[in-house]
Image (cartoon, rainbow, N blue to C red):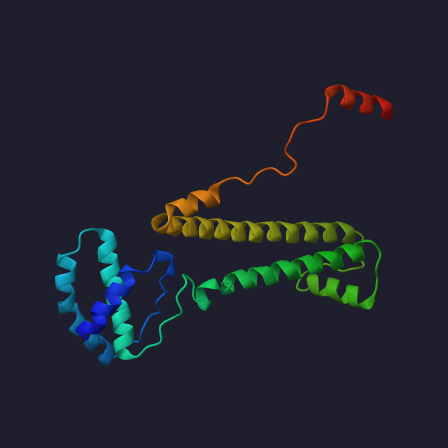
Length: 215
């Protein structure tokens, strides 16, 4: 058990932070608890000799990896992202589905407002106003359609804003991790790309002559 712990700690120290696997939770069975209790006293020597917080982090992460190996649990693949972490979150997929359905409904409502009375369009419009007292034959149906379309557009904007907040937070999280592991690489990624077509401009006299020729 001690040899497994030492090997795991050495591997963790030599592995960049972004390449560490994301460890899932293990079942809290009696056997797993016993393994953790057996490893805890062994960590005292390593923690007392730790020089900084980064080394302490490597020791604790290595101990977690050792627990996985001892109990025979399967470790996720390395590379900084597991299939679960790289996949689209379930809530984001739900929002994307809502946005797609809302856009499709806006298209049907707009088509009906423009005079398209096909059975499929009419059926969709009736479903959109289901549970309300709005009838498709009432005089102000055009106004009701416009209000419904505006409401859907506002919902799409709110959902899109939430997804942008998530993307921005994820971008900052990845930048923070990259800063801890490779600052030079981070600074290179932050460099602004060169503007395409940059170079000496045209002569001012030619520009004036060109625009005068248009009039």
